[in-house]
Length: 283
Image: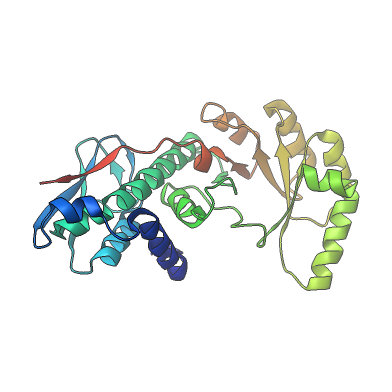
């Protein structure tokens, strides 16, 4: 599976099923015979990009390794209403036990993948990458970032530990951009951490200060309008990677891509998507 920590996935499966099942799916145990066998299909009820098929397969196998699963649509597939993503056959009780976790996971992941793909398609022709952010559901970041990749966009940092990102609050608490960058350089040297550095700037004055101090990898232009961003990109002149951020929508993303930035980060990919309508139906 694409860059998924198997232990993290196993922990998710255990905790998610425990949250839902606890000491038993008493409804199914009460009215469905233990010996009953059944079949169900994952039915697509809205168009989009499918995501979470591989996770669903892991869920089914975790619940009952004897399931027979036939997959017809892989992760990343463009799907239409009426498509069948997969079929599962086996214990009826086990299908019902896994159903909600499969749907909750796939609907959300497919919604993220669909929105990610829409942003990627919107900037076709420009040499720019669409990035996700840390605006994810606690404990589900690894699945949401997988969905972003399935949709064709790019993961940014995974967390606070794998990249330096000096944002407005860091600068305000520290005192200035210059001081924040200099202290960061000293910290990385002291702890021998080979982390890239992004610094957020809010206006041209801060950008000019940042260009003077240097020693970074990427400049994030936050909430700049496209005219000012074009001027900022020209001033940076390729000295550093440039990222656009702040309230960029599907309607405006192409305009921002045209400014010449290298990256556009979009928090909406993982916090404002619409879950894709899917259902698991007996047949």
